[in-house]
Length: 55
Length: 257
Image 1: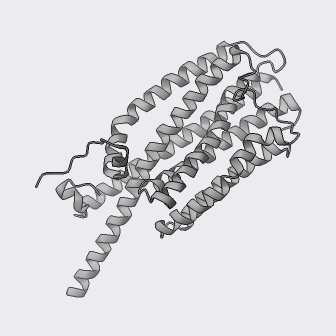
Image 2 (image 1 turned 90 degrees about the horizontal axis):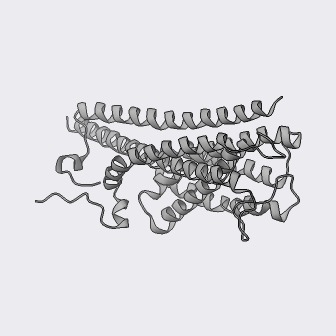
């Protein structure tokens, strides 16, 4: 097989793994935001959220 | 009563997760933008520069393999500092940092292993050899997986998971100098260091330039993902605290009725 094959496969696999990481971080954040919004809608919120005080 | 300020004036203010989240919200778009610009420039250089007279086109694999391998070790070092933060200073964000970094480290190590293998086949004539460098990096990959598994298995007791994880991370840190010096201590198929050396880099500037730009891009990519993964972990912990409080409140109401 030509060198181009190994180079292309290397860049594609690195890109695929990097994309997977980005998607994991993004989807995880979206999921947690939705979960927090659901809890807030149910009237469950952090005590500090009332006073603006830090955790 | 006046509201406490969320401004970050000194390093210890970052111990406050709410302040940390505010800082991440401010910084991450800039970090991501700069990462993209550096990758665009680095990838341009990676393919615009000449091939090597011996390696030919496969030298371009080095521009992702070497930064990924550096990152695999740097990520573990970040985790080791975080582990010290958990055990010595009991910093509230230290465990969050270590936990968020483990999957990133595993992925960078995997990139280093795969691209190394794809370079090894045309250059060495084999996908893999059990020499000291390759084996120690493979052990590092397994350690990352072990730490991820530990965090998942002890998800219901995060305080204990933090302590056990921190001790394991520090014990495993012994592998980092082994990886770094394996090519000097043992006779390996993997070549010795050619960039980070006491007597300076031994590779041509034609190859060093794209390598350094890609290394900075990879490093910034790691830190961008790390702070965002830390943000997710803080939110996850808040959710579990809220759920626990809500369950306790329901329990109290049930017993009052």
